[in-house]
Image (cartoon, rainbow, N blue to C red; front, top):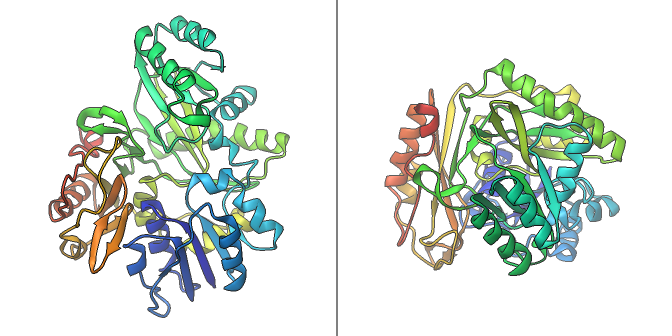
Length: 430
């Protein structure tokens, strides 16, 4: 099979790494890819991955490339191409592509759509309101005592959520999004949710339009600094499994979300093929969905794909084709931890082009994989090229050992201004 992976981040590197292990794959390209992706080799014939300089949103060029190379399966990593309808376009031209179509991608592309859907179909979620009017939004936030999450409706690179603990903070957040347009057109409307307390976990389910197969638990770390301080980011690290649910509890939580979700999709004519990723808060009143994503989490993909024992090509093909009911997901009993190394200043402004040292040494450690996110080549050197630069991932017999192994690898890597959290998986380890 010939594969094309679309995207350039850590999630896409993890997808490429796992797909390359499949004996089905004879050639693979990634558009646009990154410095780490370009170093991967296919298990079947040891040929190297080819990165092609086509942006993830340059649909005409991606389509021409897929036709020219006679690609058998295209795998879409990021949210934006999905929201813009790349799946619909490829399917219209008779090409097989994995990921939700534009209608199904609304679960992530519009928080308003998603909130309305949850309320309509009885999916447990937070008390919430949707507003484009500033005064009405502030009135609702005040009714919650200012303790709320103010969310831009559209896609904002994982940063469009402002957590508030007072009415003054909520008012500032509402002004920031609706008046100052901090997130552009993504902030034409806001969803304001009551503030929920409890451990937050990431759930993932692979879907084929009729069937949803639940993954084990993972927990992301969204805030930039240790102790969940600082600004929201796209994710500073994650681990799997998270100890907050037993297998039976995970099954029950999954059922309480996925059963009504599947019924709602059938009722609304939504044909969802891809990953549904609900962020879930385990409150004292039961699990509540905070929001839906319509693709693999990043960095959740890094810990899931290091634990997955199935052939990923077969899974994605079954998801795209509607044959998922015939497949059983198989997971390693090992724990996996991913620590994100980011550029100094992230999630604010940051410099690029910093030389990264120690990648070879870190990559030689056992059960360790350094997934590249914001990297590129400058001559012979790998240099920084984004906010989140690397996802340093290790897996071991238990969480404590996996955490120690991941941080051992982090200590071998250096670049000017590198920042990372030192408490990934600490909540699980007490």
